[in-house]
Image (cartoon, rainbow, N blue to C red; front, side, top):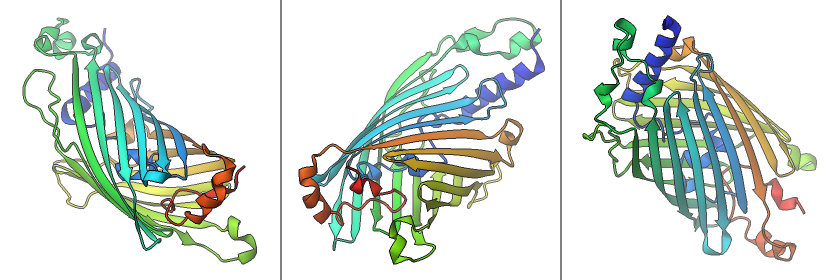
Length: 346
C-alpha cells in the first residue's frame, strides 16, 4: 500500500517538472560570488589566472527525493588576448528527473581609462534531460491499483538540445554591474514531441565593495562589506534578492533575503528565503557554506537548502613574468567580490 507521504513526494516532483521546464539549467546559487559563471558569462576569466570551482546545492532536504544540483567550473584569464574562456559541467537531480549540461563560455575585456572594465560574454550549452517513468506514481495506481504509464508511452524519456545565453559586466575596484539573458534561442523541451519552448529569462545584478575602516599599517586586513542585489525575470515570474557579504581575511560571513517580487503576480506563490553564509580562505583555497531558511511558500514545509562551495585559484605562469603582470594589474582587476591576494603567493 502506498503511503500518503510517498504520494506527496511524487506529486511535488511531477508538479515541479511540469511547471518549471527551465529549472534544470537555470541554476541559482545563493553563493553567486563562488559560482559567478552561473550568473553571467561576462564573469568568465574574471580571476588573475585560472580558477576551478565545485558547487553543490541540496534543496528541500526534508523530502526523500530532494533537489540536488552539482556544478564544476573551470575558467582561465588569457591575459595576452584580454579574454576569458571557461567550461561548466552540471548535473541536476530531482527524484526520477535528471538533467546534465556542458557549457562553453567566452568573454572579452575592454579597459576604460585603466579603471573600469567592460566584459561581454557568451555561453553555449548542450543539455540532456531524462527521466525514469518507473519511478513515478500515477493517479490510477493510487485509486485503482492500475499501472497507467501508457499515458506518456508515446513520449520520450530523454531529450537533447542546445541553449544559448549572453551577458555583460562592468566593474572597477569598488563597483560592479551586470546584465544577462538566458535561453535566447528558446529551445523546445517537450517530452511528448509537441511544442514546449523555454521562455527567455534575464537578470540585472550589481554591488559594491565598501571599506569598514582605514588603517595604512594593516592594509591587507581591512574588513570589507559587499552589499549586492540580483533581479530575475522570466515570463510572469520575477524575483529580487538582496544581501551582503563581509570579508575579514581569512573569514567571510553574510546574509541574504531571496524571493521578493516586484511585479506581485498573484498567480505565483513566492518562496521567501533567509540565507546565512559563512566561509574561510586558506592559501589559494576558498570554502563557503550557506543555509537557506525558507520562511514562506511550499518550501517552508520541506526544509531549506544546504549549499557548499570549494574554489581554488591556480598560478600557471612563471615568476619571471611577475613584474610585467603587476604593471598591468589595473587592467586585470577582478570584480570587487573576488579576492586578489594570490598576487603575493609564490
